[in-house]
Length: 328
Ligand code: G3H
Ligand code: 13P
Ligand code: NA
Ligand code: ZN
Image (cartoon, rainbow, N blue to C red; front, side):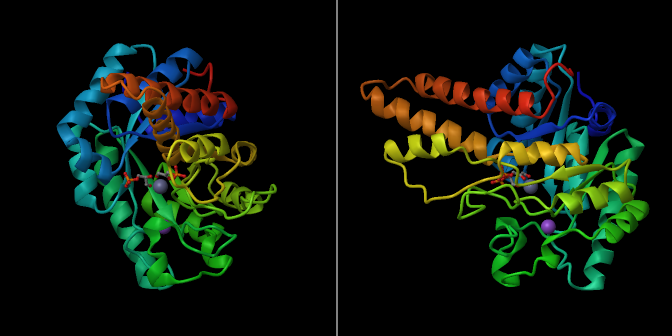
């Protein structure tokens, strides 16, 4: 059944677990996630970015999710719009049947100026008013996602324009989070706590201090009923990087957020964990390997099947590690 983000995350908070939110663009990714959820009895958050809607088309995405819900009637599914750039985008997603939308007012806002904070409050508030009327949940974002190691903002946050940011600029301010939540009424809040989007998060192997755990705790204390969201949560599995490299792929040395650190975040209040890159890496690795091993094969279903199995494995591992298994 289709459920809202608020419904899923309230349950997660009550029972102290986290829910992975996987990005989806096509049939194979949706099937992989649903198979993993079904085999582990986990609730599901499927999220679609603007890029996903451009790739698949709004009608295809909507019907694929409908098919997932029809095929797995016992699994609660939240259909969430990832990184909405404007109230108009959120409105279109609500009309399309999404049960949750993210208004990312931090995309446009340069958080260093007070007026951009006011912009973020205004657009997020507008979306919350609109969405809550029809039972749709809202995620906002406050802060600039970026790696504490490099001081580089993530791919989507205009690192070129902003340059290298200080430690403090890369962390969400708890006091501002409290003000933002009081003024917007969001159900969930994406916070900057040391993660960034994409495959290239950290240049050195993390040693247990990637996330600003004290900051997570401080924010959670200020806004205990607003669910914390961690973007950029891919772990960038080294075994998939090796498989890609060993089958003609070219990926530089890189590290992601270790699963154990995510679990520490969950213990301190993180409830929604956004993962896209890990599924991309696993599917690419599986397809490269399959194509190189079976060079006479030309039925694409063979490659897609391997890719689906690889993505499914990643999803199962995350459902289990985050305490989501058995909660559907
Ligand atoms: O936050 C970004 C997600 O990884 C989606 O990426 O915009 O390439 O679909 P995308
Ligand atoms: P990753 O790039 O770490 O998978 O993060 C995805 C994300 O945050 C989508 O909103
Ligand atoms: Na941001
Ligand atoms: Zn994100």
